[in-house]
Length: 123
Image (cartoon, rainbow, N blue to C red):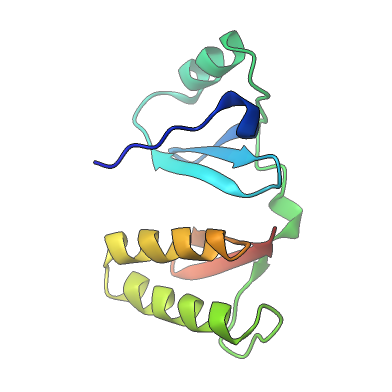
């Protein structure tokens, strides 16, 4: 398992979505999204104790839109990564899908899955 150091000064807010802890950065980028089996209440309590901003839901929820193959708003490069990621999801390759999600984040695009659909927002 790979570990990363996230400095408190880099963190804007934290929330949970399903069983994932999500930490967003000061520019709205996703610094971390990891599955956990710890209850939301316990996670919230820990982060609040350490004076992090906790949100009850994704503060950017209204900015996501369903990605479709014919979508050209994000550019050709981003579209090709989203297409490759869609195929990885369909094939059940979670590791590849996660790595492509991190690539998209570096390009300024946050992606969220609902079933086999990808929802995207620009940072």
